[in-house]
Length: 474
Image (cartoon, rainbow, N blue to C red; front, side):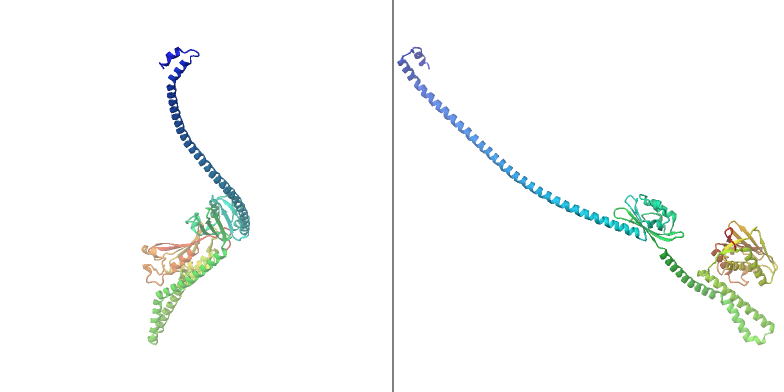
């Protein structure tokens, strides 16, 4: 550039030589510049090629990505179309199945409705009473027979009433035979069964069962005929047992008490057979009297044993009716005086009106005959006997008082036991059954016999019987 500057200063228009010299100076420079330019261009081209290669690789990657995305989109579109087709098919199948289910539900509903109507008709016409309760224990259904079988009004069986309230009403109107009727749900299943007696209407059987859903079903059946049959069978068995007990008791009494009088009769007859011709008429008469007394004793023993055996076997029956106790007592006293050949019985009454009692006249006569005969037997021949009638609340009493030997205090607790005799009467005739039978007969008629005695002073036996209702006639 320094060599060219002087040439440029002398350069004038039309100076070709200067121009050639300048051109000669500039030619190597231009060639150098061309080489540099070529080198720069080559570098640029190479850099551009490298960048083009990089762009091509990126473009290929982009193209590959785009193609992948397009393929994925196509797959997704295919899957979507498939899913849409499956969904449409499922919807069609679901619609078909729903229609079938609706048809089935409709058919089932019709069947259930028909079944419910048939069941309701069967319950309505059934001879038993039925009631259904929901899971809350409220009455949901009840047939008319339930109100007929139970003494309950229709209002008491209104829908919605709690089960416990209805059970309480039933319990209040009837007498349960089983104690489990007092509670509901005594077993694991919440069930209940018991027999109920309705006054004047017979027997009912009530059953409550818990359903699977937690509700309850109540059933009431008329079991009067079955109950009567069972009671008849029970009474027959009791009578059969009574007959067996009767024979056992009678046999035990005979074997226990008949030995002594039979021994007296046997020894007396043997003595008469061996020495009868050698005896005086007076001795023979004495023997005959003893034998007759022994036979009479056996007769009384048989009667007492039979009565005791009938009591043991439940064979004694009382025909209770209003009876005039004063009339019965007066008749018994007269008969006992005639039998004893004495007139020492005094009959007194503190009652201001007739004493009508509920009793069996024959059984009361037997009781009083035993008490009066004992008073005569265990007192002196001239000692007075006082029979006193009185009224005590809802009972009438008849007291037989003697002034005889009395009863030892130690013997009082056992006085009414069978075959028991007090210590101070062991030598006197008797078998120890009379008082036992008398008390049993009194209690059999809802009465009783009590005793008050002092040794050496006397004894008072008192028979009490229930009074008849006001206005009753004998």
